[in-house]
Length: 370
Ligand SMILES: *[C@@H]1O[C@H](CO)[C@@H](O)[C@H](O)[C@H]1NC(C)=O
Ligand SMILES: *[C@@H]1O[C@H](CO)[C@@H](O)[C@H](O)[C@H]1NC(C)=O
Image 1 (tube, rainbow, N blue to C red):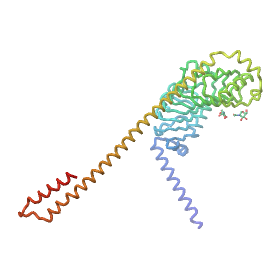
Image 2: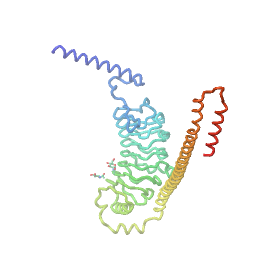
Image 3: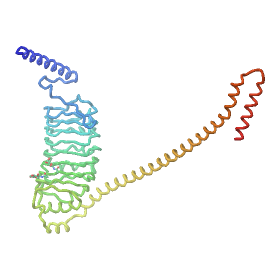
Image 4: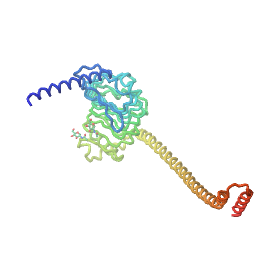
């Protein structure tokens, strides 16, 4: 018993060493020139609902790995040490839909880094060292969710002056929490935006007109902002009529005060409703489009159903006719069968062959009468 224990241990060690050797060879084969100590720290291939994804979180990565399957749809690079992104970073991964880059040290993003990611639907750049949002993101045709919280975007407002508006990205969720924003930047109309998070910004100035381009807003986080009570009350009052849920921890914002409301009715500029109207127009046009599409769909469905019904009826009659024909033929055959019996019974002899012909003719005459 005592002898077997060390032996087992040495056996285990040999096994481990072999395993390490195999992994090392494999990692070299995959193009990794990693040190043995980093061997376990590799991106793992994971499948989420039939989508190929790579989990590269928390691997102390400084660059985007270039040896992953290019068809990946999910790429999690969070909690790494990435500083710079350039046009080669995601050149291989243009199919990616969900890209997680939060908790890195990203400072510099070369222009065009994200331009080719036309399938990108969600991007998380929270907790980095960004000073602006790459404007190309707003041109991505499918980008729905954009998280840039915990970056220093104090100058974002100026950077967005050159932004082409309306933006192409159908943004639905935008998080700008804790971004050192003093004012809410102007993104132009955002007809799809339903969730905006501007919490924990030193925002001292916010007006209801700034929410006009967001006609579909359902959730607004104003927590820990420095908005004056009157502005906050007005925004809360107006947005609640639009069924927007507002998160705010300032009790003064919810205090009933009619003076704020009276002031607003005299000062609200007419331009405020213009952008709201534009935003609603986009939504209504789209609604009409989908309605028209669904009407056409229903019409086509009706036509297809009619054709199908017609074919079924046709098929039914065809079958019935075929059956009738068969029955007729059966009847015919039954009466014709007399002849072959005759033929078998009466072997072809030189006695009188014309008799058979005669019989056949007679049968034919009988069936014709039928
Ligand atoms: C807004 O962002 C902060 C910080 O990321 C988060 O804690 C909070 O839950 C968010 N609010 C909403 C409504 O999602
Ligand atoms: C708002 O902030 C306070 C602390 O400042 C926190 O307790 C509360 O959960 C926050 N609410 C939301 C909705 O984020």
